[in-house]
Length: 85
Image 1 (cartoon, rainbow, N blue to C red):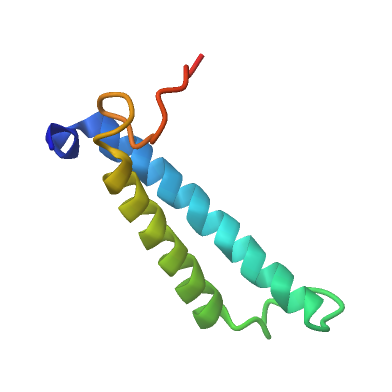
Image 2 (image 1 turned 90 degrees about the horizontal axis):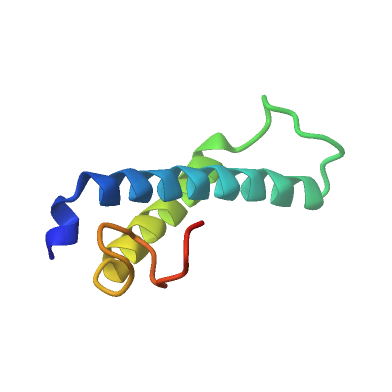
């Protein structure tokens, strides 16, 4: 479990988490649009629900990275040993 003490591992995990949060937030807003709204009215968006869904997705992303740590390259949250070049 030395990967859990690696700075590189946590930087990559944080990057994945931030990307997941942004993607989930856009998805939540898009679903709101598909539910009948003509455009995004930032004053009427249920921001608490959108942020909660995004935070949940981020937590799952971080947990997946932690679980993947022992299987991929050293100090990486990747599950595969694919070449990064």
